[in-house]
Length: 186
Image (cartoon, rainbow, N blue to C red; front, top):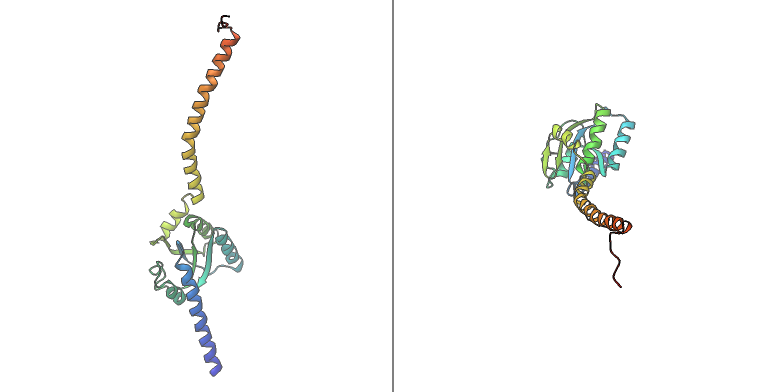
């Protein structure tokens, strides 16, 4: 009987350690998406983890009590409180749109993978808001568009300035060919 008690204590200490590790992650993330994973095959789960990692995120299946304990004192406390059923979380410190896009694609491909809720920059999101987030352009796309918009007026100005000089050179060249300039008096 003593052996069984030791195993139970070890499991509890493992859960505490897992909660502490998760808490340190949750304290620094910008986005958490809560989902259910029940019915996903091992192959689908492996693909899901790989895709989330490519997007700069992390995915893990968590026990409800571990998730709730880990979320205490972080911005995700409201999201991970009073969980029921089987849950998994995906989180990132980087681009929330990239994570939402990956998970939305997976949810379309694997119908048993379903969103429960999300959390972005301190705000709890509904399932519909997560889907809307996935439709936004990524951070890189937005930066690219802004850089294009900032560069475009300068590029146009340079083109106009060059056109004036080019046109002046063409006019002078044509005038020289037509001998419109008088030779200097000697």
